[in-house]
Length: 329
Image (cartoon, rainbow, N blue to C red):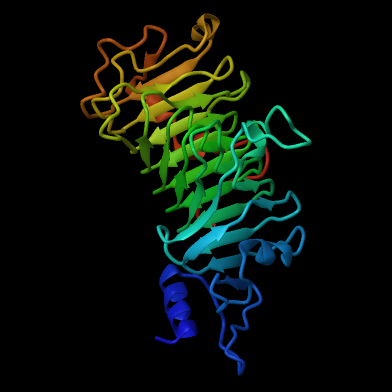
């Protein structure tokens, strides 16, 4: 099948406007950029496409990424907004890098540290990722972030986030994130940070005996991590997993309507340090599965009542203080 016809049909299926094919065989919609590692697109790297995007756009621009493996360390800077990065195939469109915290350089002889290890860092607001894999494929030699977020109103639809320790870092308080139909895997604290994030119908895969989340929700922020209708899974050799531990005081994490496997420890949660069990907001509601039993849960965690749970809606959690977050936009 002709390459451009194939991309046309794929984009049509994904519901992305692509315009018409001109005499040179290129698409004339200026709001869609095409990336193909094999050279059949306008750009061979995602970074090249990002570089041509205008600052502070008030219209929606799509970067369509053809199947392939793109070894790139990317930043979507703060002056970019209203950009969607859409992969041709979630499992076969992969952006990958391999930094980890203990890599030593002349400038940083003690190691580069966790927060420089990202594969993709999103600083801008109103950014969407669809049908794509973001991976940190470093060896297990230290913390290694795949996705690092700092922007507000970020959406991740049908994406995969692959790594080991610290896979997804939600890095700024009072920013709002929405994950839907995503797959996230890791070993220790592999979803961590201060942002408010709603995870809808996601698969969370545990690769080691460790902790899934490490929220650092500020005291004055009502919601941290909410997992709704998610499925927690574990590798065959995993036996003991905690739902989370508070990276800072007042960490907030809620699992509701989720399927929890037998590997979830009976106490469910860990306080990390003794004083944090006095402030941690660790909650559950109507979970199912072998790991959902509440009889031995940590005394400082809480099972929500139906009335309390009725207030934890997508609208309330992502309401914010300023610009509305329309997940359907």
